[in-house]
Image (cartoon, rainbow, N blue to C red; front, side, top):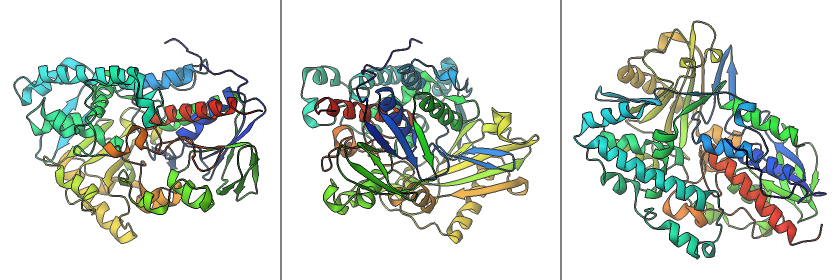
Length: 506
């Protein structure tokens, strides 16, 4: 891998101070880029841990990634660290998982998506004559979409509609399938419903469904099948630690356990109110929940949008998470496993159309101890289950307890893993926790869904149009949801800061 320095002068922001609100991946990324440009950067994080949703739960020798657990798009991480003359393996190791993941269907069927493509190709062919060749064609299209999309629409920030009106965009956008749905695109390649599910499951990572996510996001199959699924040794918390360590090397100051309660002022004279007293800064970058920043931290005259705007957005799912430390092994499970009903439409309908706790859920099981002995005591295993659910659902103790029992029954019935008599540690996390811990609108686990009307320039911008000197980073902005996208979002936010600074005197 070549290390390509960030193409911004090291002293572009010399003499300027920046307060970054929120220590998630978007905020950490922005902090790194801003520090590299010469700014004095202070990150203010309300929780005791950095990493935002990528928090870590430690209980009685068990360690769980509380949020992101899939290390996808390794090229984005290499590019990110390379901008600072570093490499990911300066901070953490990676294991290429095989299988990438295992799928259990609720009719008793099962498939492994293997690291070896020919093995996966043969598995597809076993379901449908010609499906192996169709997978090759599908992935060739996904790779094309990925390469063009990343270079011209992800790494290149286009925050306004007029940024799309140029020859470069028209030349590279042809044939990408920007407007159709993923469901329609996938149907052009596969007839078997299970194969359609395999190539669409990753839409959950984007907070969408097959019917409301643009076909552009077929690029996720290239990410999955071609770039591979990796595990950072120690979990995603190790990636957070690596980014934080690099930020400190660049001069970033971190203040944890400091809740931001208000943002007032303007460029060159901001006053950020916190539980520990005011913080003064020339500029502010918010990596906190965008809606929370606008509606709770800013004065009405400094807001870009009103409450109706945020009420009208389509939010990505929340989740019911169950973290379990258990005795014995989990031999039936892969590191990543998916449990899917043969018809998953009702689950998506109960997320996006008629919100309710799903009657027959599709869900994800993460068993990191299959790969990493350090996450559980000897003779034990760490496991968490994640059920995507509609944001805003009631999740009191009675509701959680009932759904916990239903989920444990479902796991036993469909994977053969009986957990009830083996549990040593148990914690749950759901809608109200996302709202309370992360100030997440409606308790969304991810942010804004990647619907057609919330993609590209239709997502909220990095610059505030109402308050000069205020910027945004993270999953609400472009390029969107997911750890790699948040790293890129931090770069876009920092570049907006630098570009605006060049227009004004120091």
